[in-house]
Image (cartoon, rainbow, N blue to C red; front, top):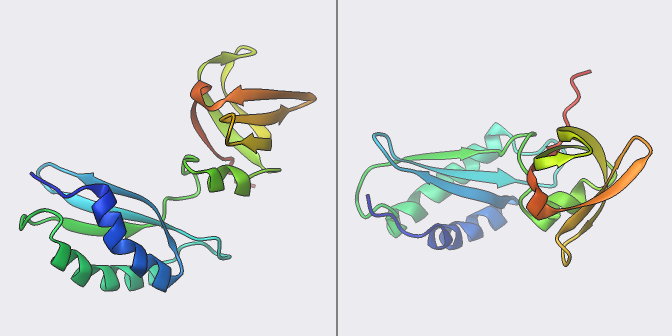
Length: 157
């Protein structure tokens, strides 16, 4: 199925996100038997993205997407969602908002014998593309190319 670019879809939806007071975290188009366009929304607001916000965005996005026709007339399902608490850090903002917090890290190759661990994110340097972490008494720096996934650590206490 031919689909318009994610950048074109995001450009059409960005004014709606601004009006609703959210940001577009990611847009994913899944092809196959049941094609689906999923728009992940994020916000700095207390409480995050709720069902009412998703519904408000969905209702406003529907006519815009009908006009844009991202699938050139082929049917698809539109999903609006939060990226979830365990979402991987993708943007500078994700790293900066989590400085001082515990994060989960998954590495391509072991660091001090571990590929998966939790640490506190001490600093993020977007120019050098690295993070400074503290695990116990050890403070160390990793390049983002070493990291498969970094996300907020979730404690279920």
